[in-house]
Each structure stands twice: as C-alpha cells, then as structure tokens.
Image (cartoon, rainbow, N blue to C red; front, top):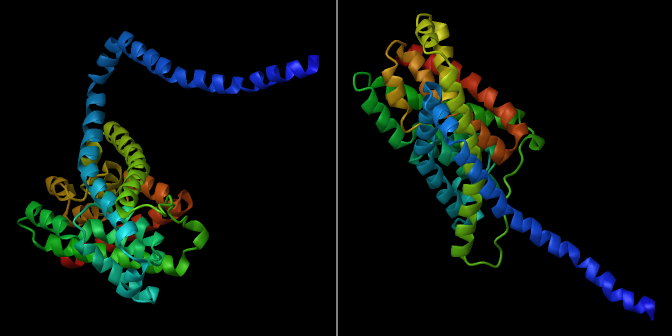
Length: 338
C-alpha cells in the first residue's frame, strides 16, 4: 500500500518541468525590465557616445541604407510571394527556353521589367529557383534586374544629363555581366554549392493565407540579413578616410578599383546610386560606370542576403567572381562607349 501511495507523488514530480517552463517564460518580461532599467541608468554615457561624429556618420549611413532598401525589399517579397502562390510552375517552363544556354539571356533581359533594386531581386530569384527555373537563368535575372530596369535607367539619365551615353553603357555592361555569370554558373557551378531556398509548406491553406504566410517568412528571413549588411556598410563607411578617395582618383586603374570597392562598401540602393556616382566628379566616367555596375550586383548587404537565401558556399564563390567580372566588363565598356 505504501508503494501505491507514492505513485501519485512521482506523477506530481513529473509535472514539475511544466512549472519550470512557466517560470522560464516569466523570466522574459523580467529580463526586458532589467534591460530597460540598465538603459535608463546608462543613458548619459549612451547619449555622449551617440553624439560623437563617428557615431553620427554610422547612424546616417545605416538609416540611409535601410530607408532606401526596405521599400524595395518589401516589393521583392510581395513579388516572391505572388510567384510562389499564384504562378503555376508550368508558366516558367513555357516562358523560358528549355536549354539553359538560351534561358540565361532571356532571363537577363527579363530583368528590365522589374522596377526594383537589388533587395527586391534576391527573394524573387529565390522564388524562381523554387519554381524549378534553372539556377543559371535565375542568377542572370538576379544580377540584371537591379541595374537595367526602367526606373534605374531613368535615374541614371537624370543624374548624368550631359552624358547620355552613360545610360547605354550601364545597360550594356550590366546585361553582359549578368549573362556571363549565368553561363559561367551553368558551366562550372555545382549543385552542392547552391542550397535551394527553403519555404514552409502552405498546403491545405487558401491562397490568401498562403500568400501572407510567404510574405512573413521572406520578410523575417531577408530582412535580418539586410540589417546585418547595413550595419557592416555603416561601420566601414565611418572608418574609411575621405582623403583616400581623392588620392585614388588621380590613377586611372586605381580609380576604377577604388570605386568598385566603394560600391561594395557603401551598399547604396540602385535606385539612388546614379546620383552618388554623379557627385564623384573627381573620378572619370569609366570609374563611375564601374561604381554603377558593381554596386547593384555585389555589396555588403547583397552578400549577406545571398548567403542567407542560397547558402554561404554559394555566396563565397559567386560574389568574388561577380565582382571581378563586373570590374573588367565595365572598364572595357567604358573604354569603348565613354
């Protein structure tokens, strides 16, 4: 009998983990309260740190990148969700040639119809891969869409009113790089380097619920990497001396490389980068063309977003190759057209 009486006690002891979980859940508001109290106690040192010129520069760049990128990230997320939910996979099989060699230029040219920037192209390219589009064509679209769409080309024409040839040079160089990278990936890329973008299953749900579920997934996923990239761009912008740019502008080769690196570090949205390039009057048109070609294809936030969408093994190979090819093609295009 004594042993039978102890059984309920053992059952009661097994219920203790639930109470422990409840206690752990209650710790979250307590932790938040402690963080808020710490922030209040340290508000004077924090205020002094934020008022420093370096921090002011950091905050300006970070906010600028986020404000420029977020609307187009949202646009890309909405397009990605629409492709995932409303567009049947058979559409892409009909729209693109079956041979990847031919599908690449078609997908690259299709980038001209998306009025967004690089933040929009990453989730859209991920949706294309999920829908069965050959990765070479999806990557060509990813690179071309931010650089040759009508909004970007119009902004370039407005920023360079005395140099209309800059619009043609940007279009030609960007499309050539996008197609060349697509063909290069088709030729040398390996399937284990490219992690297919994952997506939660929305089977059994209505189209509306599936659409908003897809939007929430992509905003959480891509938005986090955008924040990381923007923070890195702001940090590097705040510590690079402005005098280095003036020294680099005097050498034709160094100036091209300097603006290529600057495009990566600044991570400016392709909708606004033409105005920044136009302000760099100490540099040649070819160097500024390199800035306009490299930036929409590979920068800090794009590297973070590409790594998050397609995997780090993909990003560490695709990004350097894109950078090198974009520099070479833009320099040659500038020598011919500018």
